[in-house]
Amino acid sequence: MSTAGSFFHEDSHPWLHKQVRDIASSGEGELTAIVHEKNGTRTVRVAHIRPASGIEWTTAADNLQLIP
Image 1 (cartoon, rainbow, N blue to C red):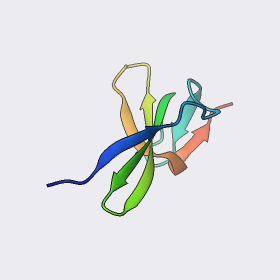
Image 2 (cartoon, one colour):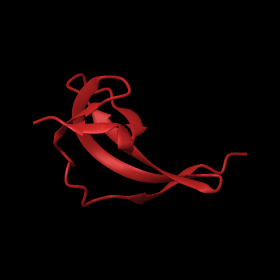
Image 3 (tube, rainbow, N blue to C red):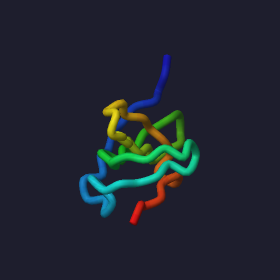
Image 4 (cartoon, one colour):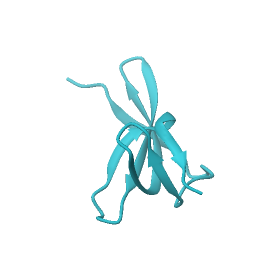
């Protein structure tokens, strides 16, 4: 049984709906959400990125770079 789950969505992140780069994958796209997820006793911030292809992926929020 998994204890992971989303419980808080950051609506006010300054980079929402802006172009970002995921430094882990070098992928680029629009930041659509940052969600706090609980995994056991840890809480992690997960970023959702949607590229032009429309196939969204997630990465750690700390992996983001704003594209000027």
